Length: 498
Image 1 (cartoon, helix red, strand yellow):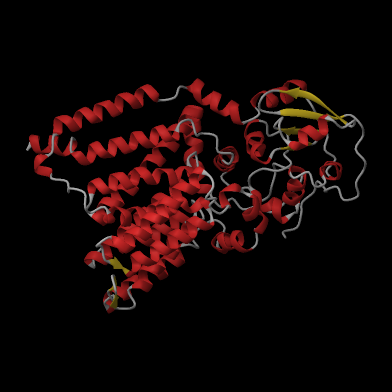
Image 2: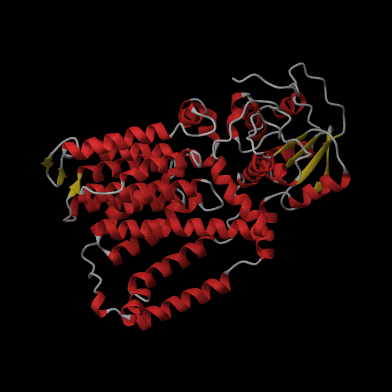
């Protein structure tokens, strides 16, 4: 018995999983610098201190009192607890753990869906290049874990006609309070149901109809899941938020990098091109038969990933099992000839490399200092500067967490700034469309941006501004002449909901 347990612990499956885990760990590097994490920490800190949710903006001077909904509140709490336990190291360990669970989850989905251990390993390793868009302490990492759990339940039900579908409604209740990606889960749930409404065979595509009893259970589960979405602190407003993002926040979608379409000229685009080619060639030349739901999910994955690089992670989750099946020409895994000693050696090497490469607290501090205005913020604090600060979009959250006394111009809670027109004004400064007019409009006294920004160059050469601090990451410029009083300057009081 004990020999069998050793063979299980030191199996080829575990060895390959450990190599993937190391691959993810090395790929993650010191990616702890996501700009959203800082205001997530501030929100969670407010929640735990006051046992209530912030209802309006209190962090900016451009939209003070503007109604705001914290739509990712439940995912913020673990990050705050990690921060309290270990600071940046705590955040890093949590984010790395979530990332490892996601990538190993993709590997497990591929193995279960294809029965091809070696093919699953190769395709999952390749797919990591698609997932780097979400590397960092992101709340969406929780959403993708929920998504894979949903897929496992639905696939099990499709294959066996039996699965604990009762877990799905509470899953969606948890999901909607964590992240807006719950809508992706609903779409996939709908695709799985719809694909079983027909039966037939079209070339190598086949569909099997759900039995009436199965369909009844699925619709009951779907109805209960829809009802569970409303079990949240914001009721219907949280349910409609993803639709607000998709159809109302058009400038957000247009200017934020992760909502951009795939650019086939950069490295990521070339990886996606290889993926698309692999899917098409596999569909043409492999011997596998496609189930209708697999084809529908593949089309959805490619559409979502090509339209928005943010969803390349989703594409990896949905496409990796299919690609693994296409590598069925690889020799299958044979448990009876497994080599536990060799697998144990591989596992030991992986652990040794991981321990050697694990970043220190100083490494994490340095990673933050390379991307955020650490020294500039210290300058602001020690010199007691007073007056409105125009800040880089990506740095707003950092100011909110580390220097809340300084009200921001903008941060990456993009929605309220788009509603009030502040996002457009910000983009007018970044593109040098009418930057001086914007700075006058908001009575800006200090500008905090990277030194290589066009705005920094413009103001350094303008008689009304002077640099008072500069390093490799940021520059602070001060207005030296009085700002003209603008009639359109934003009021400091509450704003009505748009």
